[in-house]
Structure formats: structure tokens, C-alpha cells
Amino acid sequence: MQKKKPLLIIPIVIVLTIIFSILTPLAVYAADDGYTPRLTAPNSSIPYYSTKLNRYHQTGTPMPNCVAYAYGRIYEMNGEAPLLTHGSAGDWYGMNKRGGYYPYGQEPKVGAVACWSGHVAIVEKVHKDGSITISESHWGGTYFDVKTYSTPHSHYGQTFQGYIYAYNNGITKALRHKLLNAKKEKNTQYKQEVNTASDAVDEFSIVNIDKDVEIKSKELTQFEELVQ
Image 1 (cartoon, helix red, strand yellow):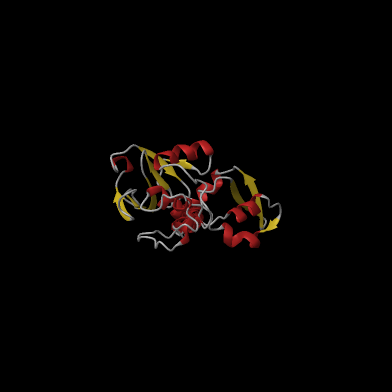
Image 2: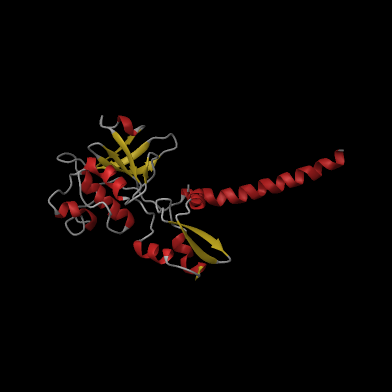
């Protein structure tokens, strides 16, 4: 009986080794998503926050204004114009939900728009203790500030609606179109770009099969497990 114990330990060690080899790169991948938080006020000359690119600034409602800031920050994060282009702070969550512009929910994520009944802000950090750091601007008040809170429901005494997951983690419209229309493209062509994808992009998942990239529309389960 004693001679059989080592035989039982070997398969256990092999299984644990396989599990750790799988989980370790995924943990690194999830932590290193390339997001750069904005913790200082944007310069008014930055096009995302000026009349050059900011729709709210162009229509006469520049910063200090929470929606003008959120619009500019989304533009800055993604490098492409936000899909939410109008409306007041209290309109954004419902407008996004009805229009299907971005994924949404109750879980905080970096780059998400936190929405209240009369205010919006951007989630810049999600801390291990569950607290969240946001960046924001205030209509007719503070141009820019950064705050950390433990729960969104107690912030400003307003009704918290949820989060809009507007941050696309570097997936541009051009790359998205390329991926969705790809049939049998070589993996090396997309490898570097695809590895920066996040669960904010919910139109497709990516599966590596025999060094080719196969795009499968609306199959999120495997993709979300890789990035969360």
C-alpha cells in the first residue's frame, strides 16, 4: 500500500501544475489591461475636451459640466467619438439602454460611466476593498476633481442608476469591422491587437483554432472568462 502513494501524488501534481499554468497568464492578462486613469484635470487645449472634438463644447455646454467631461473622457480613452452624443446627465443611462450603444450593468469597471439621476462620472480605479475612484466635472461648479467612495448609492444623495461600459480597451471601429468580417485570417495579423480586447466589446468572441482567428458573433462566455 505504501508503494502506491507516490503514484497517487503524481497525477495530483500534474493536475495542479496544469491549473496554475492556465490561471497565471490569465490573471496577468486581466490585471494588465493597459488602462491609464486620469487623475489630473485635462488641459482645455486637448481636442477631446475642446470645441475641436467635444460635441457638448460645440453646442455651448463646455466644462465645467459632467456630461461634457464624460464625453471627452470616453473620446480620450477610446480614440474614437462616443456613441452617446447628447442629453443631460440623467438621460444617459436610459438613453444608452434603449439605444443599445454600450453594455451596461451594476458592476464597477475601469473606464465605465457611473450614472446617477443627475450626474455622470468616469470610473478610474476599482480598489481591492470595493471602493471606487472616479473623475468628474460639475455643471456650474468645479472644473475637475477626483473622489473615492465606498458605494455609489450614497454619492451626492442621488439615485444611482448603474454603469455604462463605454471603455473599449483599444478596439477601434476599424479593427472591430475587420474582425467581424474576417473568415480565415492568419492569427499573427491580429494577435497584438486582439490581445488588448476587453469585455466592454460584446459583439464577438475570439477563439484561436490552428493559428487562425475565427470570429463567432455574440458568443460571450469564453471571451468574458478570459478577460475578467
